[in-house]
Amino acid sequence: MGQSKAMAGVYIACAAAACAAAAVVLTQRVKVRSQKYTARKILVEFQEACETPLPRLRQVVDAMAVEMHAGLVSEGGSKLKMLPTFIDHLPDGNEKGLYYAVDLGGTNFRVLRTQLGGLEGRVIKQEYEEVAIPPELMLGTSEQLFDFIAKELVSFVAREGEDFRLHEGQSREIGFTFSFPCKQTAVNSGTLLQWTKGFKVNDAIGQDVVAALQGSIERRGYKMRIAALVNDTVGTLAGGRYWNNDVMIAVILGTGTNACYVERAESISKWGGELPKSGQMVINMEWGNFWSSHLPRTYVDELLDNESLNPGEYGFEKMISGMYLGDCVRRVLVRMAQQAGIFGPHVPHKLLEAFTLQTPDMSKMHHDDSSDLKMVAEVLKTVYGIHNTTLGIRKIVLAVCDIVCQRGARLAAAGIVGILKKIGRDGSTANGFIRRNDVNGIHDELTVNSIGGSGKTVVAMDGGLYEHYSKFRNYMQQAVRELLGDAAKNVFIELSKDGSGIGAAILAASHAEYVPT
Ligand code: BGC
View 1 (cartoon, rainbow, N blue to C red):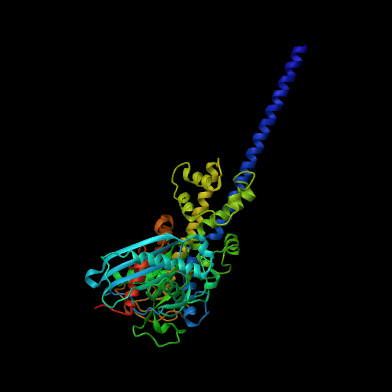
View 2: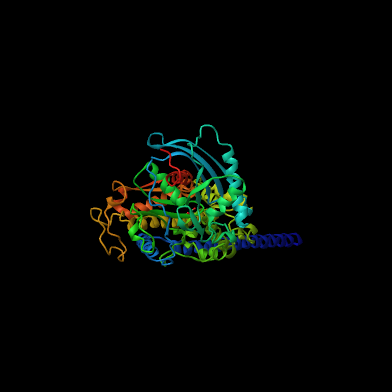
């Protein structure tokens, strides 16, 4: 009797323990489920806010074309700066001689020399060197920055080999690729309007950057002439045009983003001077600063903008370019970690730090096609020390990458089609003639053949984002095709790798003081 009572006690205790364990498991399951539910809810809301269906993209296309027009009419007429570059003729292959280029714009700095041999020889020889920009220089003084460039340049010049020859009477001339917004006053002078892409060298704003670099070079006892100040888009356009006459537009999709194109000079109403004889002028759009109410802006963009070095500025760039895409993803993950606990009870410390998820890491996760998403797990572990993620959570992370990438790529496509529309190359015209009043009256009347080429339009493209992030590239190309329909057959987007440096050297040649015959 005593024994069976004791047994019953054991049974009851066991059953109670089992019940309690089951309850714990159940509570945990319920918790996990509710976490997943909350995370999914955040995902779906974000996805909806980022959507770029065709009608919306078309609104962005039209807004881009309208803003381009407004920016050409008056200074400050649009957030699009539409800066005249003073480049009124592009290289044609006849350039000859030895020229240099320096290229400052993203995370790396590059110096380059090229020996040009005219139509027959073209680029006879070319050499370049690349160094990472010490991060402290991106936030230091103007003198430190330009002294660094001059130092790298003169040490490169000192190593010029015998294969490179100056003509008699020729001095070394440089194309200076400076990939920030500058208001030019001549082909070889311009003042910096503002910094972008994580640079903030305050005393350089308002300075003539050509004079600053020239001064630093001279202080080192060297005599070189800066023949052209060139935005990287303009260098890419010139480099592309050197080989192909149909290149009309250049786009950079890298750390930052921007576009330039060949405009009819008489469309630039804000141009005060005499119109160039060629009737054309390259316009640096600074499209990173484009803004329109049609852009799909979310809480992520607001937070990112507030914490950026240039709040309120370059909103388009912050949705598209390599400097920012990773951070957009991180901010969604932070919300999921805080509200749904997807990475455990505590939000990993580093995840809260801005810009810790770089776009190349986002791209690695996004391209993970393993069944268990190994790479997603690996990146979360190495970058944030997050272990033991479930497959479900990894899938959610992947989906966030996809949403951010797709939105950026499709907006970039809309930007390109906006330019095509402005110059009458988007197929919305009969026989190449633009009907006036096509887009709120912004279309210029011109024939397809009136500026350059064959009716084909080539967009020269450069930048690591486009080159290395293949899902971004594919989404972008797909959206260009969707937007252009049949006209897509006449539009070619061509990668012009590192074209901006060589393009700047070629522009130095076509704007040189001494022109070898
Ligand atoms: C700059 C542009 C530049 C682009 C691509 C932007 O942040 O404002 O001048 O062309 O980045 O490098």
